[in-house]
Figure: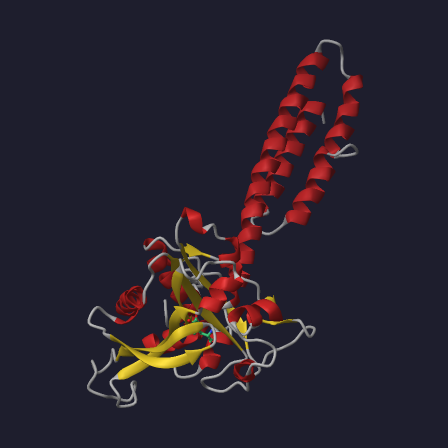
Length: 347
Ligand code: DAH
């Protein structure tokens, strides 16, 4: 058999074998490629016969060999694609993947209801030209108590026992110490001080549905010339209406805080019954929302503020209390569970 015929036969035989290989035959395909086109393969073997040809014949047959290698290489590549597709199909079938199924929704979180509450209140006060100030959660006894007019032996300290780091350093029991710290920094010759300070506070308390050893307040303070109780009342009325509805009225009851004089407890008319009496307002028509008062002259003086020239009002509200009232949350512990199902309800 001459070389040409042998080449032709090799091509036909190889292509016939490739044709039969319809499917998942990666290994066989690779074996056949080596067998035919490999270094020690059939084609190389046939090439050895070139040397026996005459000089006239050799170029034409050499060309033929090259063409055939190209043809076979293309055939192998074509088959490789078929095999590749078969491999993928086999995998897909095994996984029984249904690409037409709708995707799973990605769960998006939302801001915590307390964050929402404090941001809402911050926005209202920012709109009135207040600054928002940060305080220290780990605070000195000096600022937490003494500068708030609660000296070491003051009986009102009993209501605000807390966690002590040392005798002089504690976890703050209220946001009120921020009053002293900001007054210390403020230059009153440049204008009044108007600030709020939201943050976390701590008490030695047994946790139950309405108490937590850790909760959140927002402190408010305005100090300047001619600041009066009327300013306090107007401000509290506005915040109450923004938080609980435009129809709300407020009521001030005399109270006691060491750092304010006079001191008041502030009630808002019930947003559920409008004042007729219901379970939310405990049949009184009023709901207590915060404590406030006119800054005690002693507190001003301790910051070096002339209490003859300047006066001010202050208030402190509980963020949890506001949120519980607004959303009808009946257990304070829900705020701290970190349970998305709790948070989602207030989105
Ligand atoms: N610091 C008080 C508390 O935690 C709340 C408070 C009452 C703050 C009256 C004030 C205020 O600024 O004027 O119980």
